[in-house]
Every structure is written in structure tokens, then in C-alpha cells.
Length: 395
Image (cartoon, rainbow, N blue to C red; front, side, top):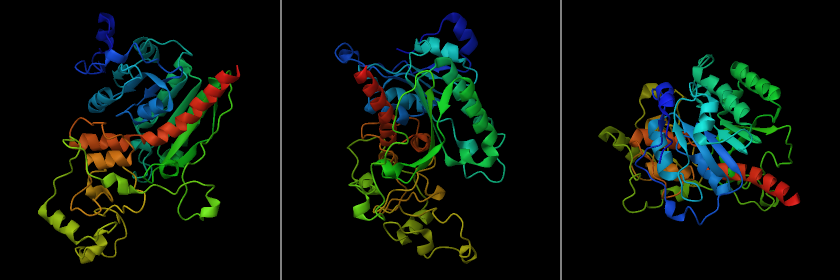
């Protein structure tokens, strides 16, 4: 069942918040037979659940989540379950009006009962696609500081932030400096931001993202940070890869979908676009090779990837919120004459085959593009699980 609000709470929060969808019930048949992991986590800005699923696979019990978007919340509650089959307590709410103490009541937790908070505040305000100083005063950038207000209230041992590299640009320094200042005052040791590429960690996608790790100074612990890459660029000579396999390619994403997969769908295109795709060379070809570029556009070097085909011999390009729309990037099927399907995009983001996205074609595509790749989350959070497990063993 969903979280039940008292009458007083409903009067204060019902305009902004909903619980997870009541019609989705947990599988209680296994609840008494499977123990929950000792390591507890909370996912803020949870989206469809990429971070949460990776955490669960790493051995973390997700005891609470918060997400504003109703369609993403339905996807989350349809797919993300704790080890005992129960639903994760998900608050479908705007984080800004939701007081952290109230959220803790709804999740039934007290300070220091959670080991890690993870989350990626919506990154559009930091996006590299925004020009000049646009985004500087974007209210979404304030969510980074709101994230830490939750950290300060819940007092996890660790917290982990994920965002786009644009958050490190000088024009956004005010928010990042404020975030670090808040961490220092709250007695957290915040590591310098690092940029990780998902293809270095077994994801069939080139995806560069910033990660920031914080550790409670009153409970220090040794941890491998940043995590050691598991894969290496094929440009590195084999004798210098230290036994690591080369990057995974996108080829696996284009195997046949399971029968009756509701996410085996793609955009419908005009005949003009279909003709363009037919003229575009297979396996990585671009619209510039199609012979259908207007003469006035030939000297224009921008947007070179739009309407391009994915090259299955390489990692896929970054899955964005528009990853199923060929007009927004290199998102055309390697050989077929249409954009990639939701399932193909989800595979590139390392979601399992039985993970079903809800909310319609475009909304589901946005959920996929917004997610932290499951495999990357699993590896990063696995370092925290390993550190905590070793500490427990040595006690």
C-alpha cells in the first residue's frame, strides 16, 4: 500500500504530493523468507529508478525515495522492489515544499538510520545545451542545495550526487560553492567532483557525468574512490589494459525484443524522413552522407549528429531525454529506417529486459535518458557496500 497521510498532513501537502500508485501492490508472498540487506539507502530525484536498481543490485536496501514526476513515479513503483518483495516507500512530490523531517516521518526513519543518500538533481539548468549565461538563475539549480538540506537532516554516512559536467562550469560556481560550504558546516568531508564515463564501467554508452561523494567526518571510513574502471578504451594497447576488457559496443542493444514487450516501440516518421534514413549509410552513417542535405546547409558544421545512425561497433552516444527522437541526435537504428525503440534505449542504459516504462512514448524516453545507467550505479555504490562490509567484518 502507499504511504498514508494523516488528515493534518493531507491539508498541508496534498496539493503538491501523492503517494505511490495504490493499484500496484507489493509481492508479500516472499516478504517473510528473504532478509533485507543491512545497508540502507534513500534515492532523491529518483526518476524511473536507475540509481535505485543499481543500489539494490549492489546490496543496498532502498528504504525511501522521492520523485516529482507522476509518470516516472509510476514506472518506479511498477519496477523497483526491495529484496523481500515490498515496494519502496516512494513520495511523489516536489522536494522544495516537502520538509525533510516530514519526509523522514513518511519513510519511518530517524537521523543516522540511513547509510547513503543518492540522487541526481534535475540537470537542465546545468546543461551544456544552454547558451551564454542561461541557466545561471534557473531555479532547478537550487535543488542541489535542497538535496543537501535532506542530507543534513537525515545524516547518512555517505551521500552521492550525480549531474552533468556543466555543473562544474564557472557560471554555476555559486551553487557548487554553497553546496560545499553547507557540507563543511554539517561536518561532511566532500570529495572533489569527478567525471566518470559510463563506458569505462561496462555500459555500452559514452556518457560523461559528474559524481560527488560525501562522508560524515564523525564516522570516517576507507573507501576506493573513484572506483577503478572495469573496462578500457580499445585505443589502449592490450599490454597496458591490465587485463580489462575493451568497452562494450552498442550491438547488443539491437537484438530482437521479447514477445509483446510494450516498450518495443519507436517514433512514427514522415515519408520524407524515412527516405532520408534509407539514403543514410548503415552502421554509423550520417545525414551528410545521404545526399539529401540542402546546399545552403553544406557549410554548416553544427548539429552534425542529428538524424545519424548509431554505430553498433562502438559505444552508443549519450542517451538524452530525447533519445528516441532522431532530430535530437544520433538516434537512428543502425540498419532499419526509424529511430531507436524505447527498449533499445533502455538496454543502452543497462535496464533489464523486464523493466517496463510507463507514461507514453515521449515521457518514457525522457525517463530513460534521465536515468543513471544501472550498471554504473551498481559499480559505484558497490564500493560503498564493500567499505561498509569490510568495516563490519573487522569489528
